[in-house]
Length: 279
Ligand SMILES: [Zn+2]
Image (cartoon, rainbow, N blue to C red):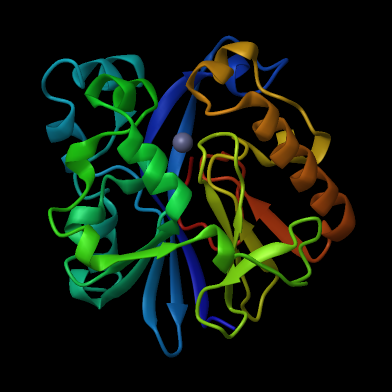
């Protein structure tokens, strides 16, 4: 069990709501980039994703990468990056020992360079997919090579498909999981579709269990009602069919355990337990 879970927002992006949820409005909606700060009694500080950071603006200063910043307007106020907010909570960059990367999109890994001591946990399939593209292919898929620290490989904790084992952690139908520290406190599960190797994390604390699901959905509402996104959203996805399958399984999980488990999409604008920001 972890000691504490806190959610920060390290910046936000703007999208028309209808793209992220069928039936949504044409208005631009603010989507926070959640960073989850997990305090583990033995392992120390663990982050799930990093949100935006100034490295994002550096990585998208020139074409063709600039197209990413032009098509996804980003808001990041001074002092709002994860590293700055953690300092104000008394957590130094080197206190962060682990970063679980749900997937490698720019809004999830832009802060990796700010944490020099952290190991990076991720699904091998995600890194393989990231490396399989050339510069333009990466950009089309929302990946920015410059965001990976120069020593990324030596700090990588890559989890292979074989390391996701058949096990019951109470999140059926997600039965193939990887128990990150072997104590059941942080349990990872593949959530393919949005990207090829996206993973979510079940986190257990003294409060309600939380299942952090990255971009498997943009809102809790879409999971609760099993509402697919607009067809436009499929343009950036790895596989629409896998996305819908992951969403369907999250919907089933919500139906099974909605009272005892909170499912938290990274960009959900609804208030969740442990959020210390306002949307
Ligand atoms: Zn994403």
